[in-house]
Length: 138
Image (tube, rainbow, N blue to C red):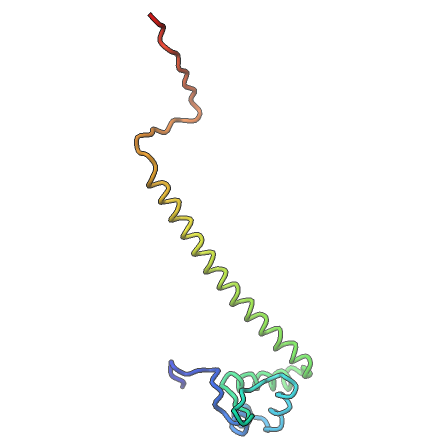
């Protein structure tokens, strides 16, 4: 089981190991790379290096193909839409954080405004009418 410092995106597996982990032939991985379905990292010598996330993605491509009967173009669209959903979810989280901060700032500003009000002013009932009549002059 990976420890807390495990990086799912670290490109560590050579193609033969990644293929074995995904239950595929290395040539299938090369095809998926050419098609842009799963794009592994590259070494300085251009060798493919797959991450744990890449291997999981390869398994999902295989599942969609074999169990769901989705063709490769359909799989490309599913993966593209999945990535788009993840990006939108991240954006929603960011906006929710910004909104919470803005609400907290507004509440703080309201509290500061209330704290700075003069205490010698007396509120009156808005429904009452007060008539002032000057005293007669003598």
